[in-house]
Length: 283
Image (cartoon, rainbow, N blue to C red; front, side, top):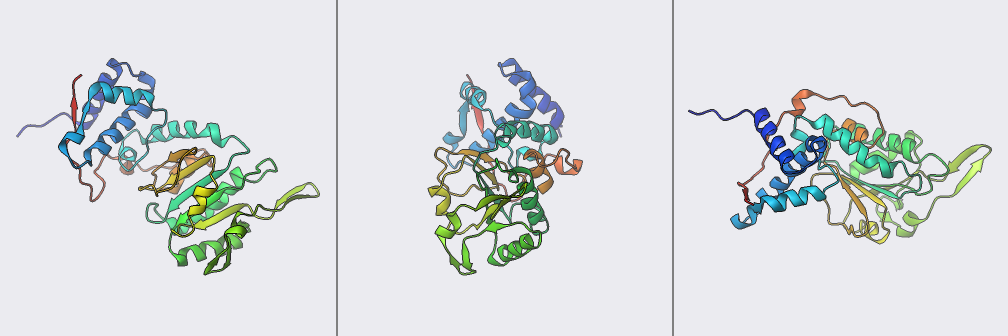
């Protein structure tokens, strides 16, 4: 029986090699190492062995072009997750700080823990953070992949929290596209700003999501494992595969602190994952 190096030692060696090959040391932990892990993961699921071969020079060149930290089910298992999330938060801040910006959010019930319990508070917090001023003139759209029953419950709970939404529904079975796309009436009542609705709410449905391709947004945030087949041309896409709302709120700048459980950061294989070896050839 032979024992290999510990995971921590392997990570330190990889960090050293990335540093020696010209990648900025300060960005290795939070940018280049997570993206290298994801790059290898993406290669490992390819069927043909020759597709899972990459040259060292090509890999380094691709890494040098990356400016967004990959957050997927693999990279969120790294021990440096807190640093990675802080780095991703800074990357998102530039566009989130802009007042006039059309934002779409896609959330999947199957991919986020405690979804039913926390989704309404998340929508409320997002609206209260990014769409409450008069200068916030682009109504955000939240697309939710969930059942009809859950979507109906979400609408009732939002109503009880006094969150005004436009779901385009005339009845539960009839969706009016024109009603959905009509902009809200905005006015001032005394010194108080008022908008007819604060958010557009859409349930993910193949017959209706085409609207997202017709009316392009500035930023599309996708909190899911598998990205739907949307038309992302001319759109800034932010794929952030997190399964805890407290982490999502943190990277979105909605909260300043994030509670974390060290057990959740232990490196582990995602369930039902099938991976093959990847060969990195020289040079």
